[in-house]
Image (cartoon, rainbow, N blue to C red; front, side, top):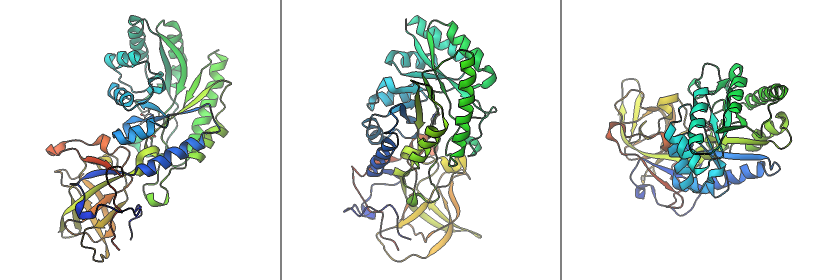
Length: 402
Ligand SMILES: *Cc1c(COP(=O)(O)O)cnc(C)c1O
């Protein structure tokens, strides 16, 4: 099994690597991903892509994205600040979230964000009050809960009536009327975000059909909108990341090009997070011990769910490779459980996984860790946060294990 991500550049060898665990970003792949997105929407000057900041906030990653002119999708005041510091244009920032605080709303108004994606009536009232006090008018899009099943993991499904997000369709018209009756707010769009890691593009077709029906109905009530925001959610290939380093962006945008009927002058907004950054990130870790249990072999890493929470949190799958060590002896494949050092039984990255035999000191790569990796890291067990590096700091070819 040869490592698939090698770029064959003179490298720092496996025993010269920085202390593990750390994240390593392939900025070259990120650039290619961003170029691919741009080329897929080149024909559509009415499409605007906002990068979902929560997926990854590493400065190198953010500046690569902002310098390409993408907007930002933020879910907290802190993210708005991080986005602006990284060079994102405040006029291209959208702000979602069910619990925006007065402080966050005031900050967003002061910096002049493009739009608040509002999720409830009390939030509309709060934004209105704050805007009136500041003598400003807040631009709002209503986040609609379209009751479309994303068919992904229950913990990352957001567009069903049982989810806390958005305003249900029966409550939509009253919310619109409320906005129209208030001085400090103006309705400019509709927002949808139905979930994450969506790999069946037909889910987005269903979303388009729901939006088309809704737009037709709203027009009967004389409601006209400047934009539609379809959120994010495009999935990536976690199982075989080396076969699909770039998500199928052109097919994704084509679904909307074909199925969504925009009105003249309307813009279509996207909020992509995972699909932009997941594949360019790897979590590198070392084997601390290999322990033979009575039924299983445990490979104990120095990385745990405090570094990468997705497996413990969602039962997510990450492709894992043993890159070996300076000892380049051949290693047969074997089944093992790959676990972290944290004092919780959920601190497991993979069970019964076939990898090249692991030895103490080997470097293990957990792939597709660029999205919701470092941003979900914690200091649980008083562990330090993992460091982040990229190919701008040093390069390595991923080892030479056979
Ligand atoms: C998290 C989030 C996104 C990004 O989702 P991905 O699945 O990472 O593309 C977009 N919009 C909103 C409102 C979000 O909360």
